[in-house]
Length: 504
Image 1 (cartoon, one colour):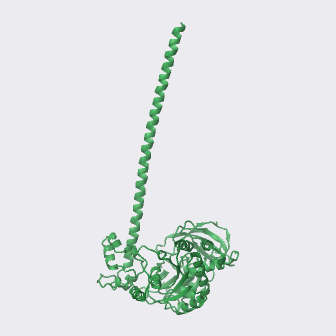
Image 2 (cartoon, rainbow, N blue to C red):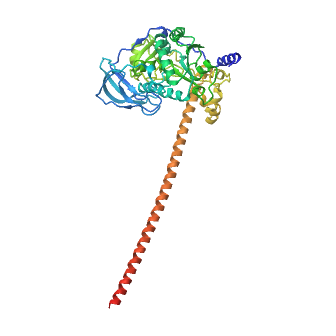
Image 3 (cartoon, rainbow, N blue to C red):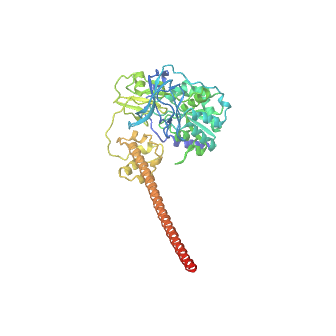
């Protein structure tokens, strides 16, 4: 790419996104703390995008920290390990960390207070082959810690097959309030760099680029110092702009290329992972420790001591909030960031592998506005990082014309919330798009069910026709056999009568 093309790409890259107040400090600057070990941990079996893991322990069984307690079920599932030593108290449903508040199966561990790890055999991870590295990452239950929770071993394996040449590490952390990746890069930059080198070995990537928003100067400095001995690893500041942490936008900013619609970065020889995932890879291979804890940002106007806390998987949000101290009753609890996070039904839900933050927001921070009519100002169009027409898509969705919304690029929407953030009429545009995507998914599932029902009905009709034909053929054979037998008996009777007359 020439200099003019790079300049034009840079100009193009600054036209999207929004600049919400980041609210990251003072939490980002506070020293990392550790949550005191809870008495009970509620470890959900569903902490990844695939099928729920299958428990392999029973109630009453003793476990060690890091012991496998649930096996992965399928390619996009991930193993689950005990976050502390103790006794399996029960395996039952708990409230999922999701706005629905629906139940999710979980293994409940009564902590013994010793927090004793399982014994592991140390090994030099750089003597392992690419396949051995991915196998150990899969065994450690590592998933993408940027929020997608896609199994990391599967992603690395696919990248090796795709013969990628570049690994991008996402240190953007563009969501307001969140600073867990920032804190991790400041405190554990050498370990992250080791994880990056292992991921490069697992994928065959020849270089790595770490993209960090320029509002994190301490993290940039720490990562540059840690990566200094490795010329194949570069640390690149990127503009602070939401949603810079989006995989495709970070890719475009760092490479100047654009991922085509319905395409992936691996199609262009690039794999994107989160810096937190690189640290988890280091823990898995460097220390033999599976993913049983993570750093969680606890922030919001209702928190007395905002900061970043190392939390075991399965700890309840109410215990994390109690440790950070509430100074006011929160008006809203959010897991993740305020732009793309999930509202929590209450605080008695567990922290999971994908929990980047817990926000306790006050009424002033969540002031709701009544939606008005669209004034056609096009603010949403200018803010959309994907280049869509949110006002037109929402109008079609409101009219029930979902296929027309799809024609305008509905499926390319990343639900980042930029359009709703800048809308002066406070139209809940993202809710429109999420609703439409849900309707389309439901229609697709219904179509699959109808096609399956038609196929089963056709197979049943064919089976009944085949059975009727077989019955008719069998009846005909039996009739023919009976007639043949009667004819033989008649012939035998005639012969016997003739023999009697001759003898007389």
